[in-house]
Amino acid sequence: MDRAVRDVRRARPPTAGPLEASMDFLVSLLAGMIVQTTSLFLEARQLIGLAAATLAAVLAAQLGWHGTDRLIAWRGDADEE
Image (tube, rainbow, N blue to C red; front, side, top):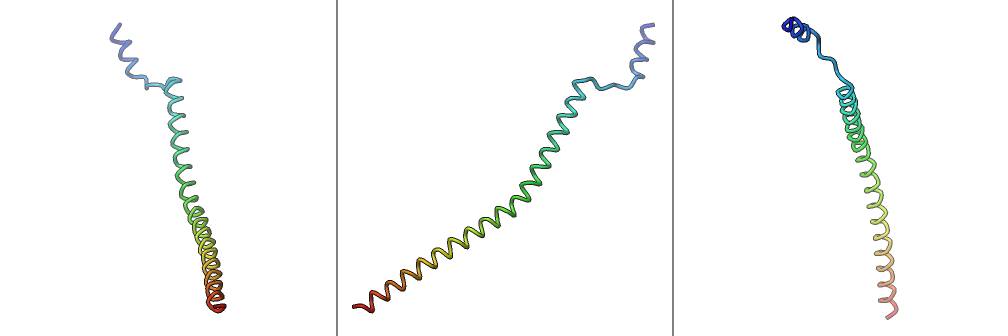
């Protein structure tokens, strides 16, 4: 009799308990968050590059304006002497 009970237990497919089901849910949630974060970083990389290029252009324009202003002032001082 005991052997028949053991055979029945082997014949049944294992069922997922509540803990296993919640772990599956958590793993799939974590995997989804990782995929979303990766895609956001890939999109943000382009925006960060655009912002850096804009900032570099503004700083170059500011330096060019300041340098030109100094050059004009220096030439004006040379003309006055």
